[in-house]
Image (tube, rainbow, N blue to C red):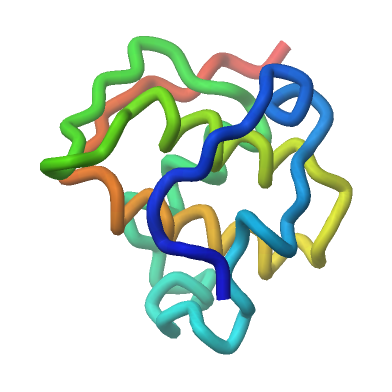
Length: 112
C-alpha cells in the first residue's frame, strides 16, 4: 500500500496523471463509507465536484503536519490518471482527503 502521506508529484503528473500504484490505496484498503455512492460523505462530494466540474472558492483546513499543496497535488494526480476504475479512483481520493484535511468548503463550478 502507498504511504498514507502526501507524496511529491510534479506539475506534469498533476495535469496528466501520476502513477496510481504509488499514489492510491488498494480498493480493499479503502473504508466502505467512501465506496458507497448512496451514502455520500463531504469528501466524496468534494472529489466528485472537483473531478466532474471543478471547484471555486476552495478553502481547506489541513491536519497537523500535512502540506496542503502536496495533498492537493497528490489527489489531483490520481484524478487526472486514466487508471484505475472510476469507483476506485473516487473512493480512494475521498479517503485520502479525509486523512489529510480536517475540513473543506467549496463551490462547484457551474456547468457550461
